[in-house]
Length: 96
Image (cartoon, rainbow, N blue to C red; front, side, top):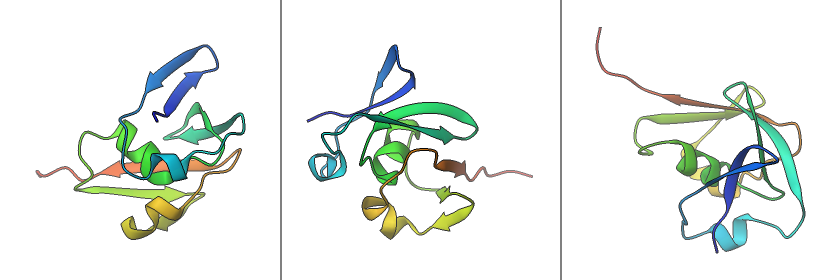
């Protein structure tokens, strides 16, 4: 099964399949979430892990927050997003 993270209802960006996808996506219609300030449409029941995996090159050095609360990496697979949630994905960058 594959899931998608959409910029708009008309365009779909395919997300990579990850092991828990089947358990992460419900059969309900899409919901709207804000990811780093941009509106996206995802399937109801999509987890934070699916969104981070779809939008990040690598999970190392990545932190994520939902509605201004940091979510520990171990909780990403169980953190289901709801309509209107605000997700921030932050990547650590080395340098000075």
